[in-house]
Length: 132
Image (cartoon, rainbow, N blue to C red; front, side):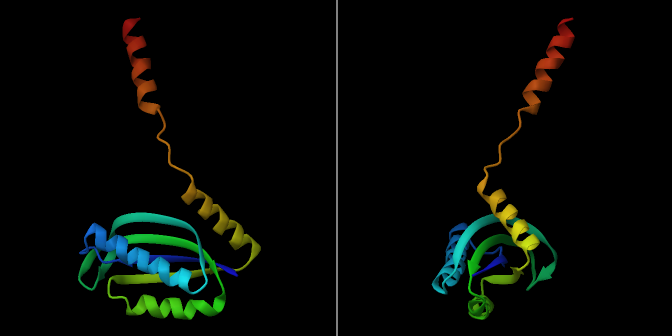
C-alpha cells in the first residue's frame, strides 16, 4: 500500500447537497478499489487562477489515502468521466521524507482549529490603562 493525496475541484454551480453527493461518490471510487481514506480536508469554495469550463470558482476537496498502485489508473479514469469534477490531481508519496510530510498533513486534518482568545485580552488591557 502506498500513500496518495488527491485534490478534486468540483463545479461551483452545484447545490450543497449535490456537492456532498459528488464527494461521497469520489470517496466511494477510492474505497471500492481497495483504498483506505485516512484524512479529508474540505477547503471550500475558492477562486480559480483561470476559468475552467467557464467557471471562475470551484469547490476544493483534498483526500489522503493508502491504496495499491495498480488501482490508481482506475480511480483517475472514473474521475475523468465524472462531469461534476472540473479538475483533479493525484500525488504519490514514496520516500521516507515524503511519507513523513504526508503524515503531518493528515494530522493537521484531524486537529480542530481553536480560536485564540487574543481579542478579549487586548480589550481587558486597554480598560486597565484607561482606569489609571
